[in-house]
Length: 92
Ligand SMILES: CC(C)(COP(=O)(O)OP(=O)(O)OC[C@H]1O[C@@H](n2cnc3c(N)ncnc32)[C@H](O)[C@@H]1OP(=O)(O)O)[C@@H](O)C(=O)NCCC(=O)NCCS
Image 1 (cartoon, rainbow, N blue to C red):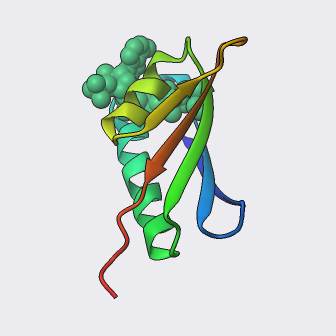
Image 2: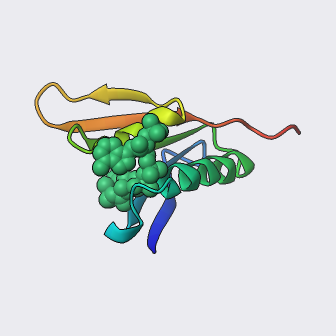
């Protein structure tokens, strides 16, 4: 129904995510749930943050990111939006 990735960026402390769902599967909560799972995977891998890049017209992506407490930084010159989510590390 789609794909999601976690990629190493700036060392293993910060991972980068991207997600794509088939149109027929969008808007059903899958993206939000998948992002929650990715944050858990990132925390288990020892990462302190997950980052993502999207655009200001991508309402679903922005809402899913906000749902998980992302800090969003909008570009002054383009529609680009950079998101950073803190992970919750599991207890040692
Ligand atoms: C972005 C994407 C992964 C989100 O996944 P999703 O399963 O469609 O999103 P969800 O159903 O979990 O909804 C997430 C939030 O967006 C809102 N939303 C969903 N579709 C929306 C739409 N078309 N317009 C506005 N808001 C929308 C939901 O209400 C929800 O908000 P809430 O947390 O306030 O309730 C998916 O839509 C997608 O694959 N889009 C195309 C590829 C893409 O843009 N990838 C992301 C690049 S960073």
